[in-house]
Picture 1 (cartoon, one colour):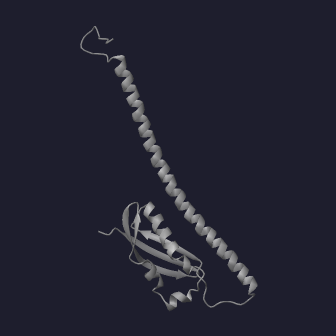
Picture 2 (cartoon, rainbow, N blue to C red):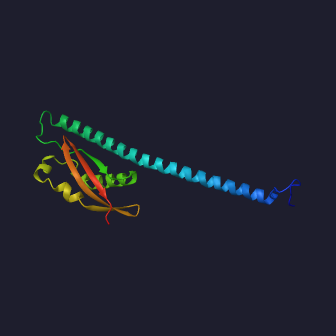
Picture 3 (cartoon, rainbow, N blue to C red):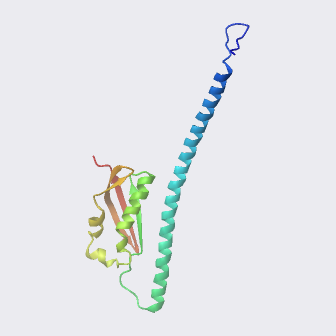
Length: 169
C-alpha cells in the first residue's frame, strides 16, 4: 500500500514507516525527559544531604547550648578556665559537592570523640587532630580521595578545620 506522488519525484513514506518514526520519536523524547528528570533528582539529593548536615549541626549546637545552660544553672556562679569543645566546622577545598559531603561526614565522625573535651587538651597535645585526619584516604564513588589537613583553629567552643582533597596517583 505504498502511495506515490503523481506529480513527480517526492515519495510519501508508507504508513508503517510513519508509525515507526512516530514511535521512535516518542521513545527518544521519553528517554530525554527521563535523563533530565534524573539529573534534577540527583541535584535535589545533593541539596537534601547538605541541608541535612546543616540541620544536624544546628541540632547539635542547640543540644549543647541547652546542656551548657543546665550546667551553668547547676553549678551556680562557678566558671571554668577553659571552655569545652561543642562544634566542629569543616571546610573542604578542591572538591565537588559529593566529595565535600563525604569528606565532611568522615571528618566529623572521626573527630566526634573530641566534642565535650576541654580546649586545654589541644594546647597540651596539638597533634591530636593531625594524627587522626592528615593523609587519610577515602573511597568515594569508586575513586580514591586523599585528605590533607590545612588548618585547624579553635575559637571559643568551635573547632574550625580546613581540609584539602587530593587524588592519589
